[in-house]
Amino acid sequence: MKYKVGDKVKIKTWERIKEEDKTPEEDWSPAFITYMEEEFNKRFPDRTVEIIKITDREAYRIDEDKWNIPEWMIECLIEKYKEPEPIKSRFEILDIR
View (cartoon, helix red, strand yellow):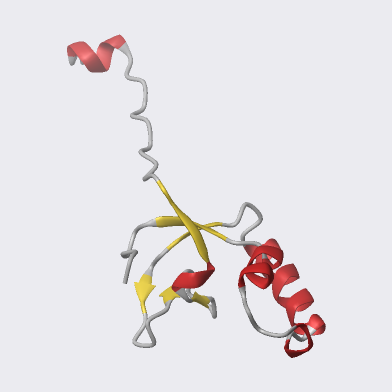
């Protein structure tokens, strides 16, 4: 598997997935795609998710409920975001109490 637990990734849009997939147009269920896109956009509006588990079905778990995604749905890895350290007061820096 290309990604690991803790990685933040960007998920492809359904339009892009559909373009890249070679499945005939009639095999796509428009109602299912519409439902999935709406649900996904509600939960992950910026399409950025963190992988929390790798499942036994070679998919990535991205939340505690029901969302598992295969590798082909991932657009790219997003560099790990490092929280900035809080600004210390001069009293903390000098350890004045």
